[in-house]
Amino acid sequence: MASGDLERGTKNRGNNSNIPSYYVETAGKRWTSWIIPMFVAVNIAVFIVVMYVNDCPKKTRGIEGSCVAKFLHRFSFQPLKENPLFGPSSDTLEKMGALEWNKVVHGHQGWRLVTCMWLHAGVIHVLTNVLSLIFIGIRLEQEFGFVRIGIIYLVSGFGGSILSALFIQQNISVGASGALFGLLGAMLSELLTNWTIYANKIAALFTLVIIIAINLAVGILPHVDNFAHIGGFISGFLLGFVLLLRPQFGWAENRHSPADARVKSKHKAYQYVFLLAAAVLLIVGFTLGLVTLFKGKNGSDHCSWCHYLDCVPTSKWKCQN
Image (cartoon, rainbow, N blue to C red; front, side):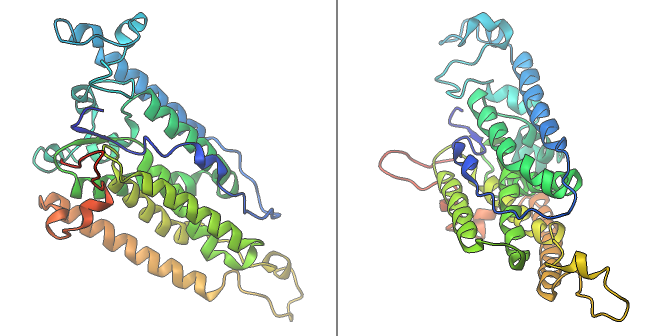
């Protein structure tokens, strides 16, 4: 986007397809995935509506630069100098619900914390996010069901929006990458909390951590909202401990043992410790984040180095605003 816009995860590319398949096959129910395909369809549909509202030919008459792909008529894209991602204008995104700190805090438009995760800055942005969602989300939904994965996706997206608004207050931000990073975080915590039932877990952990690290590292480039990535990842990581517990190995068979036989508990003690700690951190984190945000505080005032998490200046680019 233009210098005033931030897209979430435009550059976390197809490496998501290399996410390790470390799940063990169990006798448990495998779900049919439908909520992830629905999220994909909604993201694409919303982008089409945004492009319809944008109507580049009408709004750029007499302005330097011409619309891209004019044969699409009102669905054509803004000039590439304005938006190199083949998408709408900043004004259209803001009108349709992009995350903008001043409107959230002073304009009482808290709904933007939710609507921004359904908007995308361009064709490139929406395609990379929906492809990543398909690669990550469908397998998770098949394993754990639509309720738990749907909650993780939505709450992580909301968490990403909160952290983004706390630290990025001069630009607008859009995209589903906070929710996507939440799914990645949930995959990591699911592996950790169900550690004892997996084979090849060290290799799976190493591969997953590398994938997450690469995606977060890409977020330090300009015009990528890495705070949304980090906020979504932390939210999903904590939610994974709460929602994605598996029974310990052998529990399903032992529960049908004779009455006088010793039966294993469904979960191990450390799983309950993780669950309790994660639940407390989630409640405290979201409460503090929302209170701080609506008080109009700037997160950078309390963390002088945190801006480097979002953009690291080099000789090739600058990180102002």
